[in-house]
Image (spheres, rainbow, N blue to C red):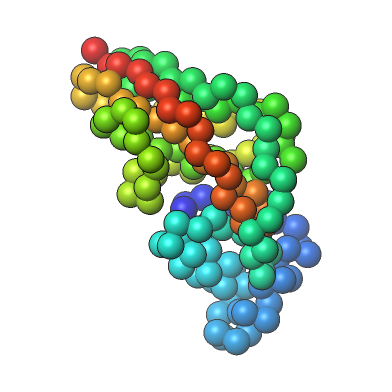
Length: 157
């Protein structure tokens, strides 16, 4: 999450960045540090990040296509097509060694950015031979965590 947030700070609008000013002043830190601090703190409680302060936990989820996982050499490429971006900001990719799982904080392997209708892709590598199971959860710019997807799997030989 820290990687995702720190890389995407530059893409926030000046209006979104300004919403962090009061929190930054109260903590005597930069607006960037206020943004990172609260979002990472919330992430520890498995809450989605938000671009604005306060984080409203609302927004319209992206319309998603069918999640797919394709095995390669010591890797699996997991692809989440985006049909309509709406308020989508990111996709959280989860991996489990067993099927029929419910995603948890510690299963998070990557967080990808929603960019229009471009598919969000995660290459999971290096992997040992075996079957791996994946699901995703989208989240909005306003901090709403979407519903977990159906799982997909692929087998590395």
